[in-house]
Image (cartoon, rainbow, N blue to C red; front, side, top):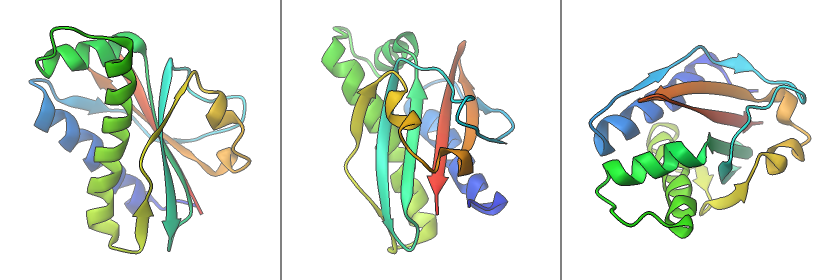
Length: 149
């Protein structure tokens, strides 16, 4: 189970990411404990496998339009489907990498994998132990889902 202090580290990671890469801050909502029937809907998942002292997964859930707008704010003029896939992985990797700095070298993260839809999250048997951290960037809503044992 993730502690409140650990969730705060992920919240800080979300805020830092959007403050660093865009002209708009992310507004973070209240984290909540998830259930199997309450997974946030999304077009894409950036998934980071975590091993070491903590084991589990970190998911970044985002809509296609949010990711397209993020790419445009990063200066990308020709937004392709491949770039949309890349950027959701980049967001997941960057946030998890920043968290790793706080948790230390025993928090080992994988390279991101990408899934369309949220089916990959629903196949995780530990999802009921996960926290979802909703965030809003510009007019778009995303979720960072933290599922660690």
